[in-house]
Length: 360
Image 1: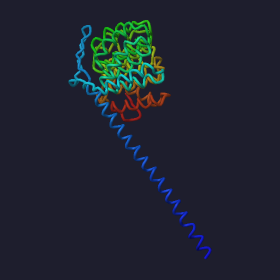
Image 2: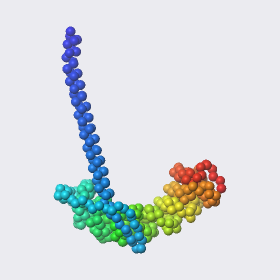
Image 3: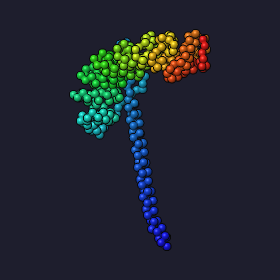
Image 4: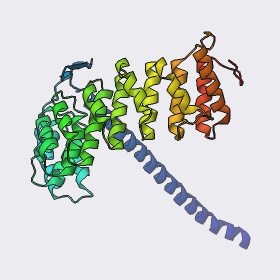
């Protein structure tokens, strides 16, 4: 009887523990469900924001010093007007931006950008601030907006702002704004006393070339710079142009002191299928030659370019193709860098050589 009574006394305690555990699990499940719903809502808002931003890219036909570049893009839609609530919120965020420290300043600037027209109007106003740190962050954030009312001020800042960092950010912003009046500004920025501004201007020109604009003359000037970073950006811009008239310039760039410039030039020649570049490219990967490139990156791009130039020509009977095959086979089997061997093997396959040994 005593044992039965003890069991009876324990039953309510067991039931009580089970109830507590079940309730706790229910609460945890409810919190997880709420968290998932909030995350989904955030993703939807972010997607809608990105869609809104990309729906308003302007259309421009640029003509610079005799060079014409047409970018066929859909007709842009005017930005929707700001509501009173958005304007009020923009004023609040702008006030916080002016008071923020260096750690929070960018956060408020990005919130202004995401607010739409009202926020970007306040960012444009910030370009006139007497504080360089405010002008700098505003120029940086506006580079992702393509907000036309800010373009004139960005051009002025890139040319004459006393702060090197403001000029640097303004020059870069002009590369993303699809504005034909940016080219004369960037040309002057390439001669700025600050190396960082010159690099930013070269980067902006490369970005414009990648977006479908010209400025070949300015990129060629930048390729002559004594700074490797400027030349790298110029090479990337010339790569984006895919202009056959640049073949000789790109072949000369294969001897640039900077390995990234050489690699980009090799890649550009491959895209142009420039057969005349083959002898120089072969020397770059020659495992027994004196002119073998010291950079694995440049050798990899040279091998890749040879595969692109002679794609599908293994059975053509051309002696140059056979010579290329021999050099690629040697690189595939003898180069000390696995990446180079990989690209050499891919190039051989692209040309049509599938055997491990190639004879002339």
